[in-house]
Length: 250
Image 1 (cartoon, rainbow, N blue to C red):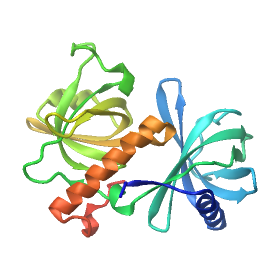
Image 2: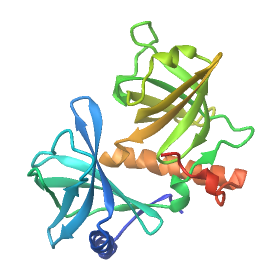
Image 3: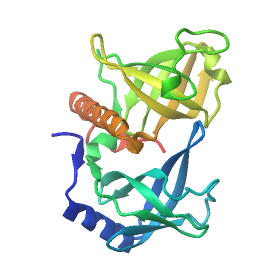
């Protein structure tokens, strides 16, 4: 079974109805020039054509989506994660009105739990400042490309270990493009990510990444589905799917 399941119109309606009744928190993802921005709010109303979002009262929005802009929406409800794209119908300061989505995907719960990389399995990543489309043709002092080995993975992000201590120039919140390779002969997947933390100790460094913008495009949703499938596979191989410590660090 795919880690990313397409919902029917009736199921979409049920999700939106329940989310509004519970004032479910949501994350809005959009691009501001080159950077990905996450806005936080909650679903509060819906009708046959629109859904209404209120901004989070304690987390101000650095910008307001504009009319006609397509944004990515993600929310958690009843132990599942739901993602969809929606077009902004209007965006006054106190609320945001979106056109009701015609498509929505549900991510299996196990796919957004964190799975350790199984023994004997090597997953490597390369990353660079900017976005996934700006991968340098070759590393240089001005355009460095770092690499390392993943220790765990989820649909929300991953942890990477590297011996390249030059990563100490990275800071929390830096936007990077990443390339993940799950083994020899397998096709690489690309994603945008944000640095969550960088811990350098001696000759080694540990870096936490959070994926951003995957729900914004069909290409991104395909990447999300692939990652989710890998997570489920790794959980089966390590027996971590029922381990409460396997949850994503937030």
